[in-house]
Image 1 (tube, rainbow, N blue to C red):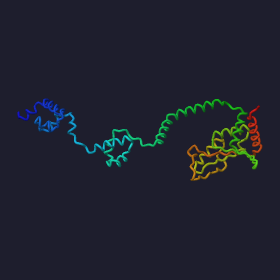
Image 2: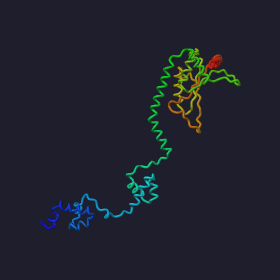
Image 3: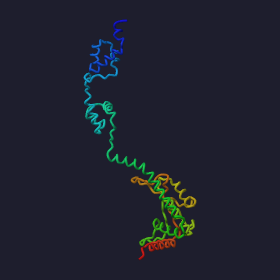
Image 4: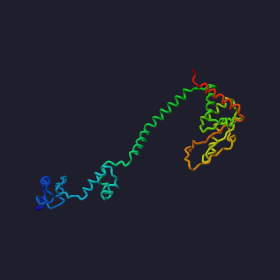
Length: 285
């Protein structure tokens, strides 16, 4: 057995000595010289797990830059801003600050809008459910309509949406136009109540030229209970490129115009009934 083998035979003893010297603050070179160990691999194994003393660490020229970069990042600076300020690469900045919280670059207004959207995402369905429940409750409370109730409702509906004669233009034509299928349904039921036959009615669709004209014609004809060939020629509204249309999509079907032929007597009945409603609604002493 050689002398060198004898020297390294008791590894545990050597490690105990090396660790003690390391904790005293000796460098690897000093431990090597003290213990006469010239095998670097063995030397590193002897002090494995023991940090080097602070005085042996070489000063890093980038330590100040790193500290400054972290400081700026905590203040909310972006990578680009830090790069311009310190003159270092983005990759270095990313490495130095990767453990820090991400910076929120949104403006207060943007943060407020996002918070509102998140709140609405939670509250929206609850409000919609409450709205639907209230509507259904009110709907159920109406119940069946008497003939008088339907008559008065139809008069009010016509006076709100139908054509009216003016003192400067006497025109006692009964013409009604609307885009809401539910309104058209009530109006047609009112005409049935007044025993106005479908043969006395004319129907015409008015719709934007870019919409599904054929689909709209079929829809309104079905709602009115007539064939498509009973409809008059559809009025097409030209699109103004300066305006932004919101009435688009599959639910857009334009408007349906319903006219009553020879309707002057009916018009006078509508007008008189309306003023009767107005008179009855006035407060009494």
